[in-house]
Image (cartoon, rainbow, N blue to C red; front, side):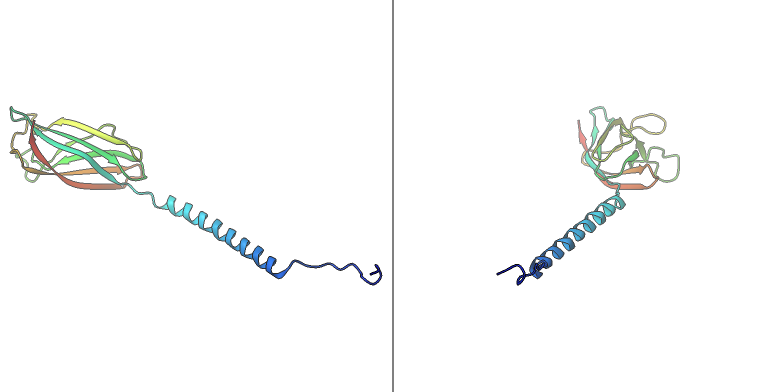
Length: 163
């Protein structure tokens, strides 16, 4: 064949290859949109969760009671303060329950961090609480406050044991 009989022809991309390219572009755009949505939703779902790792209410041989508690920030939000309320009346002269309150250290906890307290349980006048019997279950509440002011609570009970 001579060049005059066969003029230069340009051929386009085959339809099958064009389809594969378009599918690839669509998949890449879908993955990009999913990644952006997933990132935005994980930021929007910050949660404060407080869990009790260990709790003991120990009665010594002389009758004094001590509480030992370890709590953990199991959420993904910073906790500014933590309070432990043991539901035992520490001031019988006041109507209603006056719980024994203590704060574990450190007060503030980053996600995954733990905080602990070991404290003698005492009445408001400073004398030791000796009212519980071995085996009693005493209600306890952990209250955590986040940096933005929201609170999360975790209720449990602790069994009195002999030291």
